[in-house]
Length: 115
Length: 115
Image (cartoon, each protein chain N blue to C red):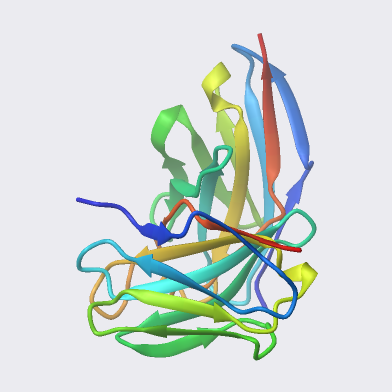
């Protein structure tokens, strides 16, 4: 069974640009969550999608958005990039119909550098 | 609101010595608790989870953790450290009894293993 796949793995952008990150969950998993990891703030929850609907959202500005497609693949977008957006963005999927068991399966992340 | 505190951002042990990584949680509901491990340039991998069943939880790679409600703790232990255990370890609590993908993570503890 293939794991969670994130693309691209590494990318460099400049301030003011926008970026789109992609995540393919484990087959059959309907929940996809996104996290931002930085040395200063650690792991912070961005949002979660389940069956194409956002069901949880963290405390991030509106520049951070996401969506989920009918095949459960998810994308997140960050507009008007700031230097502080440099981070490792992790995607995680969770299985279970409706109520999962809380176990998140993480991808290897997309490392974004903003110059 | 749920929260997690990991005591010690860095822990160093000798190969073969006991590993003890500390985690205390705060939760207004019966918690679902997790330990994850992150190797350099990789995503997070689940070590073990507590879901209100047995208080002593055994995980992968010889790790275990004990849930102590009276102490609000969920410390991670391994009797004998191996060089391959060098990584960063994260304790996390689920806000929704494990049914949704937003976890609250501790700041992490980086484990070093000396030969």
